Image (cartoon, rainbow, N blue to C red; front, side, top):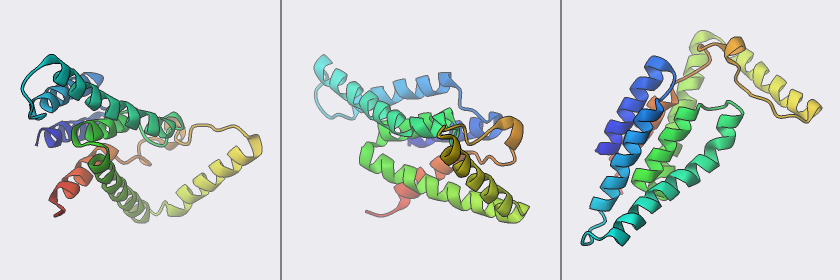
Length: 174
């Protein structure tokens, strides 16, 4: 439940400001570490708390490392990487990966619908193929998204998709 509150606030900031504040991520990390310690189910002792907190941070670090290239090439925002890391920090790598995967599917569907409604499917596809050709010919990987060129019209708030993906994962019976 705490994770959903964390993601809901992150989604709110993503929609409103197109970014997730670092202070919110820091507070969410502290809450997640404390929750991991409390939910460990073992008698309180420093070693157990350090282990649980360390595992939480290790999961976040692994996800951040995995998704960093997508941020580096401006395919997703830094806030999206932070929310994905928090999902795995709170949920574990397996459950977190499933929730993130569902969030990405929701994002893909939303993007497709947005392109169909706005009639920009061919324009975006042309942009993608030009990007791939440019990388192939120049042998240099550059940012896919450029705010000056693309504006916010081409952007979806992936934080919202990650929230709904996590909610969908929670609601799916085991």
